Image 1 (cartoon, one colour):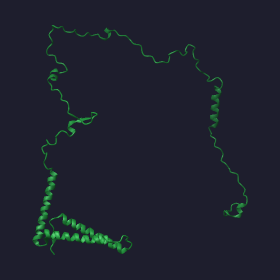
Image 2 (image 1 turned 180 degrees about the vertical axis):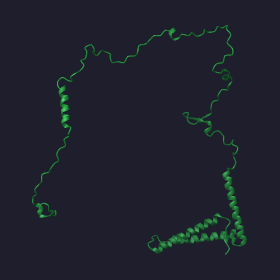
Image 3 (image 1 turned 90 degrees about the vertical axis):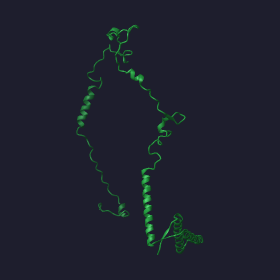
Image 4 (image 1 turned 90 degrees about the horizontal axis):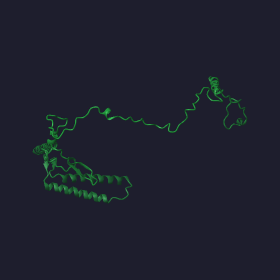
Length: 254
């Protein structure tokens, strides 16, 4: 009956159950414990009362004296002049002696006297605190106008202009061929202005109709009508900007 598991709200759970004692595992004891205990007792018993067995007894003459632990500098040794300077220098020449000729030293006095003195580097002071920099890097020296190619058009710009000129010539040739074949018609200034005014009048009509829409777009038909007006107005704006940008306009002759 003890092995039967009942639901949590069963009446059988109210019957007291016998509690089985918990079997704890035995405590771990090292196998080296007796040796450790024996060694610790043997070392303690040897100097339990009077300290270590053999200790060097201090001598009564070796007591701490005053200034004995301070660092001392080595004593100075006096040297005689004869010991350090064994070779005598030659005597100072007399006023009547002639100077020796043909002796060259490490320093060439001739070059130093003839050489041109160094010029100070030009600088530019740009702050009130004395900050300075080389004058060449300050932008005050006109070094760019001294170049050989100053004022000339760079090569990449010349190449770009040549490509644009070549493309314009090809376009003009193509237009000329199309006109000769009768496939394209050139609009005159009057026709171009008339088309531009017609586009602007159409845009005004659509804009007036757009301004007359209701404030609340609550149906699908109103929303679609508004989108159609916006698309038509955008297309007219593109056409107007195209006619205003270009003076020469060709249209296909159908």
